[in-house]
Length: 269
Length: 187
Image: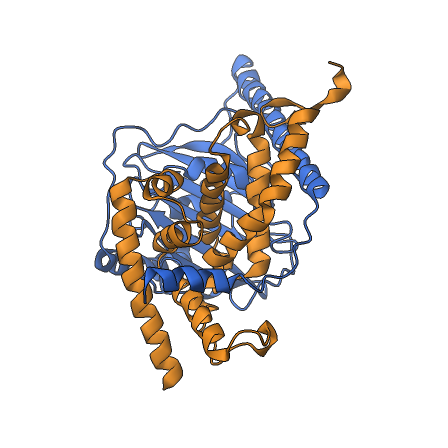
């Protein structure tokens, strides 16, 4: 097959394209709406920080001891609610002093198998209310698929809570494989820095899937690690397998539960 | 200039004349972006979503980029990043597995071309859809958009050497992939 065959094949592949129903006015209206929404989120973040600072400062000023929520007892996450301390400033990650890494496919595959086995071991304790927990094979673009130059792996966990099936996706990136992760994640939903651990940054992102999946929602916690690698644990309000069927607005996994998985040293590249 | 001539953009107020120039750009480039997106992902509906997302991202940066002489290539970069980001979304995972080889040519595509030629052109695209994303991208940029090695390197934010090696590897993978598809259909 010559280069000319490739040119011809690609041209032919789009020769029968469906009509383009493109409305520039609608596009500009959608773009303006997104800009307004992002501004509103930033303003809300700044306002919540002010409230959070006041909430901490007042008891201290009054000489009271603050109460703490015990780890693992955090309330169920509902998208849109703000249960964490947001920051209006850009999250600075990665730092410059890390070595980018490239993993061969065999190493990625082996690590994917290990991560899936680890999840099967720890999930009953992390998700005590869940039953019928299934951990799928890890992969890249598709389950079980790896390719040269791949920088991340991901796997899906499907489980049942109160008779409803849900999913969690665990994704891990090699050091240097996700340098634009903060920008990407923050452009998809409301993102907040929720703390630091092991020299890395913890970021929570709440996302409404809008037109992609009707009523679909995702709550994610990212551990942006000090070595330039990253782990995202994303909980969905529906099960990914078999096409999305959203039946509830609630994600039965708390930010604390997501955080415990995202910071697990056995998960990551 | 009155207040009415300003609208709000991501980086501050956008002049209505800027917004008009963006509309012209969007109308002029929407079809091209959708075609490239289709070659990347193999699904016209997703291609339309990718094209819209790309144009919205460009709108947000319009006042910064509109004077850029390489605006077309900038739009290619944004499209490529948007598609690669989209691939990270697990609910899109079916895209890859859906790229199955057609067992025969699609009769609805028109009688002008011979079945053999249509079938062969399908194979090129189906073969392309089996390649890793960056190899797929480099072949689309080089052989569909007809970009030079240097332009492709700029769009993909990599070195010219990487473009050359990815192109060679991509062509080899595509040949293998097409041969494999032909073998499967023949058997």
